Length: 478
Image (cartoon, rainbow, N blue to C red; front, side):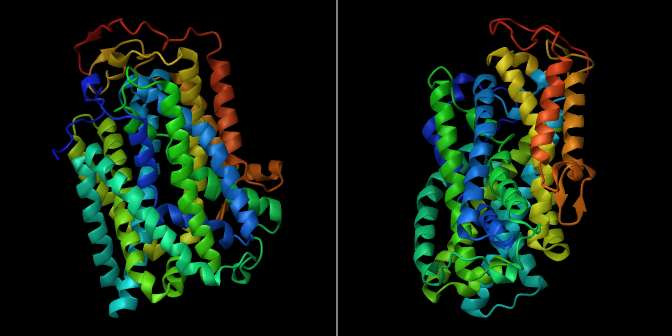
């Protein structure tokens, strides 16, 4: 299969040969991995019982999907990725906000996937063959996973789609075997080793779990969905079908692995750590399937995240090729894996990462969706590519390539979110206004969206253009 040559340029309609079923396949297959499974471990580690953990994941995921899924329709119309498409609201240079947010999201999730996948792989190899779990062993396993991941990411969308189709079937079978393997030790009571509710009370802890384990899953896709829907033609597939496919793919792709993680956390008594107890509690006959799940699933998920990172860096540095950008971010992600392994505990690192990125990313998503609703899904695809072509002008040029009201709205919304977040090592000063409950994503989205609406209330909708129009661009360098 040939290597993908496209970066964040506009995909010609004749190359947009994917459909809603492919979207479901890639959202399900790529997420059935330990990097997503481990999020189901967070509620039990916070001290919640089985039913409270399950309800927090279900509610958080449902809210996240409702916010995130409509973003898939934007790239269906623009034929480019979401960060580039956001230039219609933020300006052709201001869309770098989306590129940076997407880069950070994908970077964190790639590192997390390789980290947890590598830890489980080495744990299984230690049980099977007595391989010592030392620094050299961890380094070799992480490097092996990273190398396999970057190969799929560099080859691009078609290879990752084919891999996702295989993983959707294979990982489902492995997880079903896992249910049988861990079922004898399953319990619904809170794990005593967790030490009670993390935040001291039920509802604050439940809300933390709903955000950290449930909402964070869909939010991770706020810039990723367009990487897949840009290959779907709106001439052949309706927006309704694509939206329904997005709902289904996100629901299955996130809830199945996360609830498996919750189930195995109680069965393995994994209160303070997930990888070690998961391996220790596995019956001998499940070790090889667990090894396959840790390796293949991690490559599929991290490969997709790395592919997205390559696109985002390509959008930031137009002169770089997608392949070069992908190799660059692969090195950065691998470094983050080692930092996470040696410098952080899994629970603290995951909780801090997802809460911060959710607070920063939510206002960007809200502003982008407001723009989509205003222009009714009609964009000037040529004008969105101005920055990539190192030119000037077009209806999305605004002020020097930046839409100041949108950028200011996002910045203030993100700032409010950071000031209202509750992390293991940091509590924002605005928590006093919410009774100590982390409402950072709600506040950041509400402030960012409301401010954007207020600042642009009297402006004409610049994105609502005739799709047949052409954009006059100067040939001068940007």
